[in-house]
Amino acid sequence: MAKSKTIFSCRNCGTQSGKWLGRCPSCGEWNSFDEEVIKAATGSMQRKAGFQSVSKPRLINEIEAGTTSRFSTKSQELDRVLGGGLVKGSITLVGGEPGIGKSTLMLQIALTMPDCKVLYVSGEESAEQIKMRADRISSNHASCYILTETNTDTILSNAEELQPRLMVVDSIQTLMTNRVESSPGTITQIRECAAELQQFAKSSGVPVILIGHITKDGSIAGPKVLEHMVDTVLHFEGERNYGYRILRGIKNRFGPAAELGIFQMQGNGLREVSNPSEILLTRHDEPVSGVSIAATIEGLRPIMVEIQALVSSSAYGTPQRSATGIDGRRLSMLLAVIEKKAGFRLGPKDVFLNVAGGMRIDDTATDLAIAVAILSSSEDLPVDEKICFAAEIGLSGEIRQVNRIEHRVAEAARLGYKTIIVSRYNARIDELKTNGIKVLAFSKIEEVFQYLFS
Ligand code: TYD
Ligand code: MG
View 1 (tube, rainbow, N blue to C red):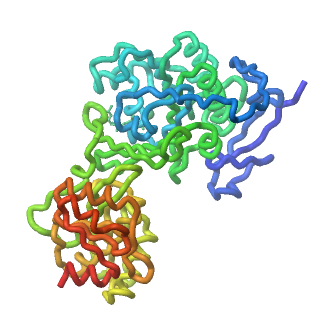
View 2: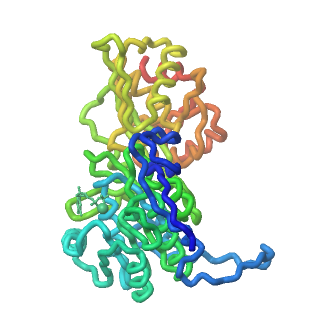
View 3: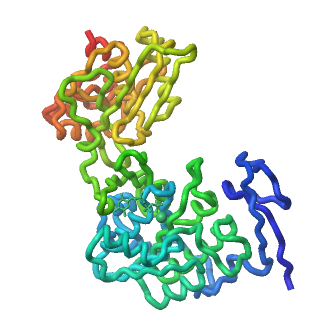
């Protein structure tokens, strides 16, 4: 009979070691090693689920391309992030910080999918607690079943019996399987439980959504193992002080990644925000300095966001630089370019930058709007609120073109902007002007500043 063995693995990154370590040599996390007992004879190969197909190599031309049969979750935003709906037999991981609203989102989906059985498995809350939350969200929940259980064998036998259209598991960290002896939440447990659920999904065709908690550094606990296994990884994120929550696609085997869904947390659950530009822009009664509008693209959607900057004389020797919603290094780069190429002395000043509404933006097309907001605050000169910007800034101060400019211009025109400033290097600028908006093209950052502020 095979012996079981004890290993220690890092809760944060999954690194394994024969002995306990105070600090993980791989990710540097302190006190993250858990003891795990692994029974040698068990493994992912010997699971009970009905997977006895004898695999043989087949010619790719003889394989019929499976029509990925999708069904709608009745949530436009979730469907969008998934690439058009849930795929049968797929496994999706929804990660997020505690309290951000993962359980609320998934329960809401489970409640609003009409006329089909949904199994909502919770290892975190009691059935009564879930019922209270359900009453808060929706009054109609005829076909949603709740199971409070953490043992995968019990969960899977119930699921096989019930034959739901969708199964949600809240959360993967609370599950445990009999095949591994370590405590719930350890890497081995998470991996084994996810593998069992995945086999269930693949063999039964029932899509499974796993909820996973994120550790403070932003990765899903047990992240590496899970992100590889599952078909789709979504992050649910947002600034806690704002009501907005963003569901971001990180990986998607069946559709575009990097797609974005926007929700607003309200007293009665999450409301879908289908027109994000309008909520991300603040209305100002009179022109204020330090504010500019960027025409960005998130996923496939153009979104207008407001960039706010505050530049002030530093009270201390070391000036402060702080960026919320954009990358801090990008801010440093832009400050250096403004200083060197446009001749403004920002070195001794504090610079604070913020994307309104608590959004996080990765799109480099916000560069020009950021630079303009910084200068506007520094010089205390407001920018005309009917002007918006869509261009990247290069290290030598050149205004670079950005992708999908026609979508950005169209969104700006739709929202009533009179002028959009873009790069002169965009092809076919003339064709963009048809949207009833003035398209101004520049090639140097100094020219933009001159146009706006003199
Ligand atoms: P929850 O879904 O429990 O978070 P997670 O599962 O990610 O840990 O969300 C909890 C927060 O959402 C909590 O602070 C209360 C708030 N909330 C609302 O504002 N409105 C609602 O209708 C519900 C159900 C929760
Ligand atoms: Mg929860």
